Image (cartoon, rainbow, N blue to C red):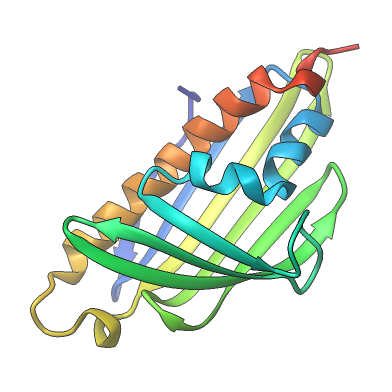
Length: 168
């Protein structure tokens, strides 16, 4: 798993998960994993399915509707691709509705001789209105934080296995 400076914290139910780690792959391999919607279910362990519009690789404005599981409950969250700087920066933000009141995923890539330094930042706020009074928001925040940690571990592993991972 990536060696990271991981620190989930909650402030008024707003959480942040941040990690910096080295991937032994070229930025092109990581970019392929980030922008190919087929990888998304492999990145998020609790994701069951995803619909992207328009279909295909990530483009700015592409909307994503994702369905996953928290315990036995099915949840939906909605995002859109907000910023793409090829081989450098990938940003996804939340859309109205679904399990998160707010959501931002920012992945920055820096090519190095030994691979690519990845700086990942996830900021989110679980929607109490979506889940209702029977759910413990702190537990939901913890589950979401763990899911983001797995995302980073899976991003590293998938990128290092990608055919474009060979360093030149």
